[in-house]
Image 1: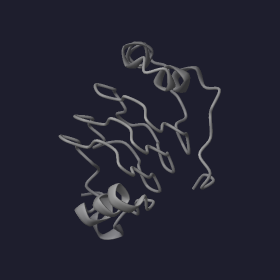
Image 2: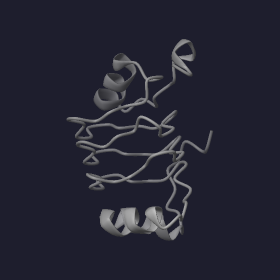
Image 3: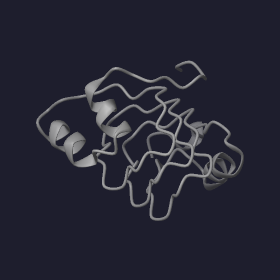
Length: 120
């Protein structure tokens, strides 16, 4: 797992997310570009409509981010924190229990995957 301290990556796609350019991010992803979002700081970012399918966001810091409607089903979020994030309509990975998500939203805990739910 990445450091518990969130990082500000120089990755160009990460920079698009930091500047709330979801359309630009999605266009580059659709063109085949990948990015490393492990442990990144996306606090307060507006990620509505973003395509994060298949990306590793383990350890990401998403405090107060707008995640409404985001599909994280195939996104790795182990160790991520979503304190006070807006999560209406979010699809989380099956490995995350509702209690784990609630603890992260309410208290900022790092989300832990339930090993019994892996590969479901």
